[in-house]
Length: 265
Length: 237
Image (cartoon, rainbow over the protein chains, first blue to last red):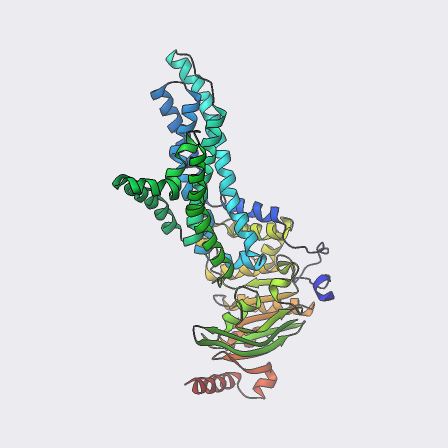
């Protein structure tokens, strides 16, 4: 097995550079860095992230003009962008490697595919937490400026539970987007499914009382309602847990199993 | 260094590879030659762990690819030069590879120079690359970690005559330092110019194996190739 460790003979043509350090398996943090970088290393990705930031600022400012200087309310207004563009960004982060077939390269450099999949799903979730904080960072000056312009006192009180509930809601909805992306491995299909599923459950809920009850237990979009409002009862928590199981864990597990076993083409 | 031992691959009842066995030793450039659909790509994907054989083993340094400690360090792979995100620049694609392998960024400049991509070309997006440039980029990617084994699927495809000449020189130099190079091609003329050993495959079976001289025995190699593949076709029919 000395062949594997001895590396000195490996000289690419025309090279006299020094020895490589002893090769080790790719550590997880490196996979994480690479996957995070892939979210922002093309022009279209940068445009999407720029749009998201702009949308956040504009929607918060507009809400400030409309509703007055209330920090908490202005912060959660950013949810408009986070419910639309952010899922698309997350889905593209997961599907990109498959649609462009660069998975061939990724999985030859790191054959332990499970680690790659985990490293790929974490950056969008972390980005969602960062985005929630970014909303707060934008809402604070907007609150101050609006108060000054309108000549009314600013409402600075921020309900910490409410903020946590809102952030957790954002993260869970992005997790659902990731799960659909893993399940379908196709950006357009996953984005369409993400939005159609929400609409469909709304429809089901409006049609009958039974439909509404099922949606409370199965549809994440419905079940996160009490969490976002920070009024989570034990019953709501149980509904949320089953909804996460159905809308996030199940599609993600099916997608992961397939990605682990699939022939990479 | 590379060993296929009785590798069989079935796809829904169709036998893509049938008892494929051959080896590639260090210091040689082995051409994997066969018509389209002969099973070359399937065999190479099995070799680097992207697909599993139905039976048999494909090993590098005596181990299946997935069980190598750090496969990206020991084996440089180019399976499809077109399989990259079109929006990334060539440099970015190499940077991602270098990051994965824990190599310094200076290594990206080194491999770019090695394959003859200019700094300006490297800053362009992959979308605008010609097939020849994509091949050079893919070869640069395969060489990042100075691997001792190179697996290249149709690397000469899209290269102009100068490019093929360059590839020959590069692979020859690598083989002379003890590397094992396995490259596939469906064009005999390419393989004749680049490889010093040939494994001929047709209909999923190894039809012949040896140095160019051994196979030709003075005859035109193209004639040999056509005879071999025609025989395989008749057997399949």
